[in-house]
Amino acid sequence: MAQQYDLVVIGGGPGGYEAAIRAAQLGYKVACIEKRIHNGKPSMGGTCLNVGCIPSKALLDSSHRYESTQHDLQAHGITTGDVSIDIATMQARKTKVVEQLTGGVAQLLKGNGIDWLQGTGKLLAGKKVEFTPLEGLDSKAAEVQTLEPKYVILASGSVPVNIPVAPVDEALIVDSTGALAFDQVPATLGVIGAGVIGLELGSVWRRLGSQVVIFEALDSFLPMADKALAKETQKVLTKQGLDIRLNAKVTATETKDGKVTVKYNQAGEDKEQTFDKLIVCVGRKPYAEGLLSDDAGITLTERGFVEVDDQCKTSVDGVYAIGDLVRGPMLAHKAMEEGVMAVERIHGHAAQVNYDTIISVIYTFPEVAWVGLSEESAKEKGIEVKTGQFPFAVNGRALAAGEPAGFVKFVADAKTDRLLGMHVLGSGAGDMVHQGMIALEFVSSVEDLQLMTFAHPTLSEAVHEAALSVDGRAIHA
Ligand code: FAD
Ligand code: NAI
Image (tube, rainbow, N blue to C red):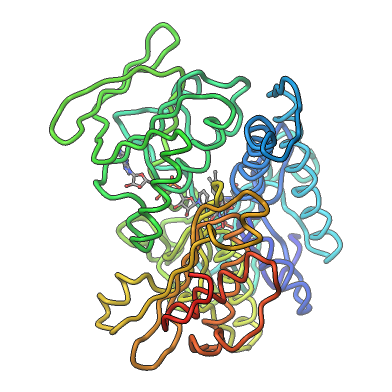
């Protein structure tokens, strides 16, 4: 007879595994079904740990060290001689980091008494779950089981969007997964999509020596970001050598003689360019393939997301859905908090995710980060806004470190002084922006930030100065 579970989580990404752990902490008997095989082994951690957040940051870090060792050290009086990079070693380090973390998650599940069922989960009618084990792992467990848990959390994540004009062939045309695994630096690299992945992975390979061209269909750069932030980011990344072509619609690709030619239309003119590799990163879509039987009772939206309410409840009582599979930003931290919220709700707690304070970070160098409303979105909501901006170019610590690019910007309500948003371009922006998130959560006024004492010399002093500058009071500008 199949094991009885209180909760079955389908998907072991950041949303699913955090939900499983929180439920075990609350005393539930939990199974987490995960089917992923990575580097030939079953692997926990989802997109994020295996082929997303973590490997991309490992490569961003390696490539940043390589570039700064090559270019930035002379000013400090440091001579290094010839600097070279061994891509195999860099990739092996990335794999080690990934395995350390995915192994760590498996251990965490074990330590919390959670059963990792290695295989595929499918929600059936009546909240039942069909579990099909991965083939060839354990002959004893190799039969399909039907589980009858009290609760189910669907956390099957997302996959890259494919476009017919550039079909991924895993050789010359790759998606983000392929672009994390190049075994040599392509001399020329095309990227379709100037979104988060295009900028991060485009930066990785540019730093390592590729000539990178990014084709973006829209005529604006990072349209979801504050305009001032997007404009300065585009300027900084372009200066670094990323060739970002806006209003450039790819119409066809052709692979021949180990090269890929991109045909595109830019502002009405047909053009083409040939590359060694091409990355397609034009967004991700929810992944629900084989997840639901026809009579499972779950409603999907037009775009294939599982429909949920603000607390991640689906159309079936006792079944929740979280993370990339549902509406909202496709971010690991959003998935994690939804997982915890769903479990806390099951437990009767009034848990809530504050979707207004979910941070966005683009891990280029300098980093780009924001939380809350942009100046434009606040105005669109009819709010009378006041703003303040302070550049790192006059921040002592940034200058001492030789990292003067960027600024901190605050958007606030002109009538009430309430803080509405924080936008940062700069070294460490992804960490610094958490100050804004905490301030927003505590419904701070700009004056609250103005009255606080920030340590000197720190990059965070720019946060203080930006708050002061909202009222024309910045000391160093
Ligand atoms: P996933 O992580 O996608 O996990 C879902 C898991 O479910 C998968 O492992 C899948 O194998 C499994 N699964 C699916 N269907 C079934 C089934 N029927 N049975 C069993 N198992 C199943 N986000 C950030 O916040 N910060 C970043 O820096 C960041 N960097 C990224 C870089 C890249 C290159 C990419 C591609 C993404 C990045 N993301 C980042 C996004 C982040 O990875 C996702 O938002 C996050 O992983 C979503 O978590 P999830 O738990 O919803 O789904
Ligand atoms: P994205 O949505 O960030 O960007 C895709 C870009 O491609 C957009 O600018 C879009 O206008 C453009 N585009 C779409 N179709 C196009 C076409 N046919 N031709 C040219 N351009 C086209 O998606 P991306 O970069 O693929 O990333 C997917 C998601 O993964 C992100 O939205 C984010 O949720 C997550 N992610 C998060 C990271 C982080 O938090 N640092 C890092 C990487 C990914």
